[in-house]
Length: 318
Image (cartoon, rainbow, N blue to C red):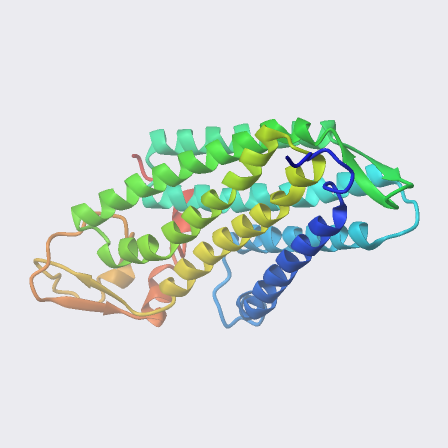
């Protein structure tokens, strides 16, 4: 029988190797998608205020990886408590920002439905509150035998992990229900199908990735196993949320086709209205109005530019 609390089993070298692999995954993701932010800076892509939350998610995750990498490879005594506090702040900041991107997506999918907005915001605030508690409670000291920082009482992080998993399951269910509502009603079919293929898949992956750390911290076999999957789970959540954001943002800049049963006489009707892809559209016959990126930019001069902007700046009664 394996004694999980033996020093040999708790050797941090396994943890270091596993985390180093996850570092490479995120750094590759970060560098290969850096074009998105650079396009906004260069003016090649329209600026939207939600890009700050997107960038915060990515930057916080990157800082967490850098701090964690330094901590695992340092051999001289340091103030581990200060170091772990900064790691937790950046790590949880990434998690909070990623969850906020998902909340914005939910609000947009449900067309600012007040009940759904309330549920999503309550879930997010609850998660943030528990995360703050986790930052305050966690302790770390320097171990002169292992010559490394070790986290004390890792089981105290149990509420954070469990609440985060529950929160993401709730958000996933709300997204699924909202997308079923869009697809089966025929409203915004193209956008709804895109979100279904891209957004739900990534959100599902992020939620599933949180199951291993939750199971291990409930079992509480040893400190190393309690921590093993927490960083990979954070990285997965960050990648999932930011990919969801990029997918829809790039979709908004491409040609979109909208169909009407009785097409308006004016060819410029869309440029004179605050078009909302989540507003009910009559069943199609054969008339197609093509909206390209240029027209999309013109029609939003008097209103928000994306569904995220509409969800936060142009509320519509649910």
